[in-house]
Image 1 (tube, helix red, strand yellow):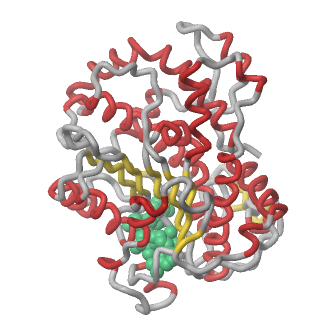
Image 2 (image 1 turned 90 degrees about the horizontal axis):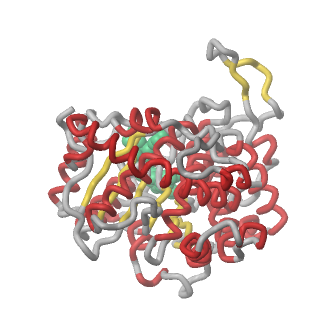
Length: 415
Ligand SMILES: NC(=O)c1ccc[n+]([C@@H]2O[C@H](COP(=O)([O-])OP(=O)(O)OC[C@H]3O[C@@H](n4cnc5c(N)ncnc54)[C@H](OP(=O)(O)O)[C@@H]3O)[C@@H](O)[C@H]2O)c1
């Protein structure tokens, strides 16, 4: 493989961003602005890395002066792909961090400063994700939850970290019955959908499902902010973690969770659902502003708040509804949660022992990583042996160390 994954040389002083849905519309525009500021940017899309649009986006971001660019591919209609992409993102961040500070302990969790959950879909036709959920709910709500959960340790390490999740001025005012919204249509082995969902689904209307999904994005932000800002390291794990792990957990409190309406913007989504009634995408700067401006740093605006679209639905502040929603979301995504390893059991594993977990194997991760583009020579297949032995050398220690934290972090966002 000759094509590259990440651009070279991490410029000191830049920040690290990950933005989903950066192959079009608002996400693409936001990535361009972040690149022009010389940040390091992980961009995501569902297109293959060899797609001409992806190639040209990467070239463009590089030419704008991005400190580093990496493209990760995942279809958010499959939660497994989201999980694998998150793992690949952690690897990319770790490699960037090592470029920046070669002597740094590789067992450390790498830092991500800002995660922008931007990818979204408006689907005129009802579809289902691979796991059987309504596609709009899977892409717009479940995928950000899964991705955020897995990147939480990196965000805790980030500098004035933010999690931006894109809602909309057209969000629903009332949360519908969550069992029906998250109803799951089970597939048989041939991939054909059975007619029996686990709960009676809501009758499909593209606009109402989209609006519900955007209320969910708002509620996700609101509840996550509450959970993180109230987080205390449980006494049950105090003596099981070391000082740096404890400090990392304490930094959770300072992650700023924000949501917004990105503006009414003439993108393919708007054209599909509402017509060309918006602004030009080149002027759609709300997402960029919320992700970068010092107006929104921790302590200046309320954690969990909604921006640019008025007050937002009352349901996003209703404690009972927030708990009900969160429980449902965590439970539905919990079935894909590969990190529910028993902490006690994990701690008994000393480096050299195998930790029993469903975590994607290194070969699975590597397979996923080939969907990345990078010009870091260590990421090309020609150097795969080098990478493999490097992984082996540090692998077990890093794996155990990270998984203690990943398990704890996963439990923070569990039901
Ligand atoms: N445009 C507006 O007026 C408006 C208003 C309020 C809120 N929003 C929100 O703003 C965000 C961006 O929307 P946009 O208007 O920029 O839409 P867009 O131009 O259609 O871009 C959406 C992005 O999400 C990606 N995406 C769609 N389905 C995906 C899937 N299954 N898996 C992975 N990626 C997927 C798209 O990939 P492809 O390039 O492959 O399609 C694209 O990169 C969305 O969350 C949307 O709800 C938009």
